[in-house]
Image (cartoon, rainbow, N blue to C red; front, side, top):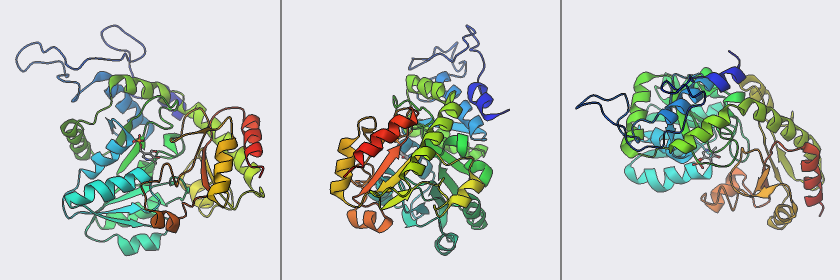
Length: 378
Ligand SMILES: Cc1ncc(COP(=O)(O)O)c(C=O)c1O
């Protein structure tokens, strides 16, 4: 089946009791049992919920995996993957990772004895020098938030597997419409479903997809034991979102490509980052491992004052955290999404005070261009 067909039908069937075509919201915390030790597959809603399962099946199909496991947020999905490891285990992470992932590792999990190494995973030689027999997980974010660095998933997975390390990919930025990390050799793919999967900026959620059944069982154990589960209404919203993922991603990308072409060479910019530009260092790699370039465009205007001017002079772009919704958003990574990364580390990896990230929405692109043109007049 094609992606759009899977998006609408993948893992879905009419609800058995009433024939409801769309999976209803099972807003209940518990389920009647028919007798002692006899239930209908549902006991308690932290452990099982039909609406959640419908979303989990759908995203598993879209990622080409066998099992989906949903969580209350992207961060709790990432935490669940980390909970698979124990004291002394080493985890190698893309250095330009989302600030929340950095904070989880450095400020929470480190105190439980997990060891983290942040490295430039875009360079396979750096990966080979840092992934060792004590590495249990290589956690890649590609493209990264906000600098859009792209890692060769296949090359990292092939090498990491020779040392028996698992490979997880945060696929939030591309969505399964543009990229399927499991098909590239990753063992685990995860999303903040808050972003493109839901696509309407009206819920927070996360999801992990794997092929390996024992790994799925471990993740389900963590899901239930830790209890960071999404509510049924949020699962319904995410499932409703994935049905239009293909349509939305096409428009996000068309608009992002248009704006990147407009911004290229603009005299107000010092740097422009978009994997769809042939000047992007991993443009060819992106063409090889992905089916598109996504809807995020990042640029540097050189200073905090100039960034402030842009952020306060747009009107269609909303100044806000997050990305992946139908509406265009603009943000200042250094003080917003990446504020939890220490300043010297931020500057070292290129998250400067002049950096601005656009989440390009699905509006008429002429209106978006006009809005940016006005804000970039200094
Ligand atoms: C790439 C990436 N991964 C994970 C997250 C965390 O997701 P959530 O905010 O749903 O917890 C985000 C949030 O911005 C993100 O951009």
